[in-house]
Image (cartoon, rainbow, N blue to C red; front, side):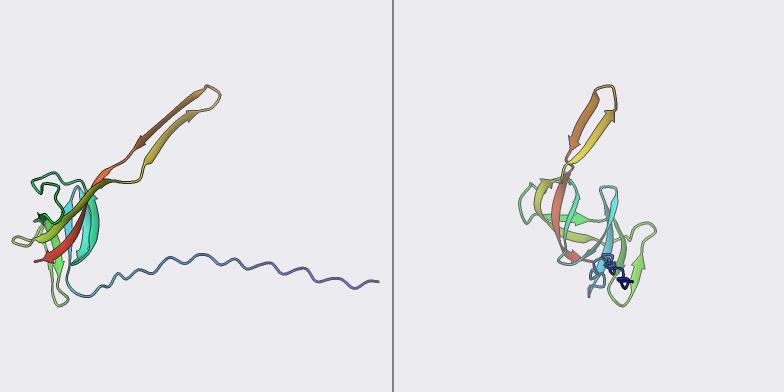
Length: 133
């Protein structure tokens, strides 16, 4: 009788691990509310927020102030607003305005030749946080 061959080993598939991001940046951070959303910001961060209409004049480097500050942490103490912190503000500078990636909305019904395709690109304002205080 011929000897039995061993079954080939199955390849072990490793699951992709989530990227480790540096959530613990040094220094001060704040939570601001703008455009119906909340953002955690550090000084020097670049951020895409909902389009900001205003008198910044669409000029690069124009100052934008966010007075709706919900939380400020300076590394030693944390101030939490109820709902906002009076007197606190975050200063940012205007970088550019743009439009996000296209979101496609497709409606389809089988066997009836019904197909609708719509797209939407949300406008945003890119800012750079310069001062938290």
